[in-house]
Amino acid sequence: MPLISHRNLKDFVKDIFIASGSKPEEAELVAEYLVKANLAGVDSHGIIRIPDYVQMVEEGKMHPNVVPKIIRDRGAMATVDAGLGYGQVAAKMAMELAMKKARDYGIGTVSVFNCNHAGRIAEYPILAAEDGMIGLLMVKAFGPIVAPWGGKARILSTSPMSFAIPAKTEPPIVADFATSMSAEGKIRVKNARGEKIPFGWVLNSEGKPTDNPADLYNGGALLTFGESKGYALNLLMESVGAALSGAGILDVFAGSNGVFALAINIEFFSDVDEFKSNVDKMIKTIRASPPADGVKEVLIPGDPEMRETRKRMADGINVEDKT
Image 1: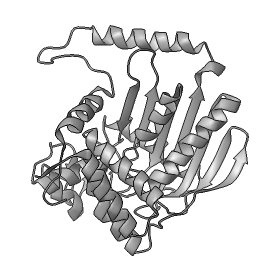
Image 2: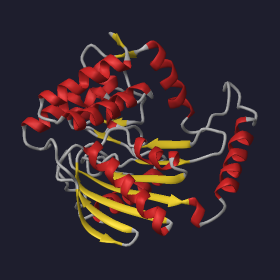
Image 3: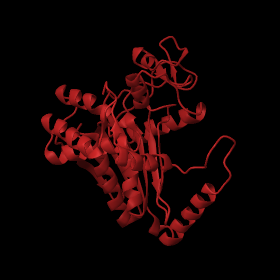
Image 4: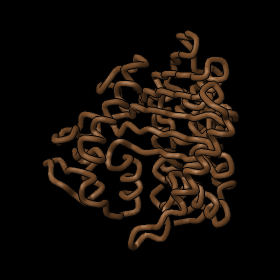
């Protein structure tokens, strides 16, 4: 696997999107977000997605240079038509619009339909946390690829969610996870690297547990995490991410997402400094708590990605030969 610096990789990726029809500003944004995912160690949502993106442009399923349109705007709420442009453009616009509304109303909510794959969705709540707000993103992803709890047929999507909570002196709490046992992209990376997956992630086409990632792409199905709990959250993502925006539900074609962005302006609810100090206290108390046997330290959501980013910025990013 070649080791490439993030700067060189970003320039190369930007050139690819310019060559496939994007204006330089759009190519820069999409390249930045894909490479940032690789930097954070979330290779499943990084440059491994480029072949799919380019193919979708060629097939007319992804339209370069689309400006998302606000079609409903009512106080603290808005609905956006992403026009099947790049998901990174639409998701960033949605969170920034939610933040703008939160400055005026204390809370801002924006739903998006006709949205393509948006990459690592933690990037968007992080925008809110960097502005001193709480950010949340709920996504009905492309599908179907996930079986409902107790079933074996591909009916649901991986339907991820992400949130970011600002602190005072500590880094923000950042969580980003699919409601399936794994994001589809992680299985794609395992498949590209010729590695096995844990049993319990995927059922093969016959409905039996498998450790072969290729089985997912041969009629198999992902399972939800936490049995019925992840299944219930998956239905929440479907409902809020898709049905609420008008993106449809269950039957959205592969490539189209429904997105729900939420920003909470802390100062409308409590003293910002006190809130951040309390989050600091929580983080420090958890970090100081004794680890379980065999565990080196107790981490906060966002710690692994932050550490991996520092490492890969210094050492470079490993890119699979297949990618």
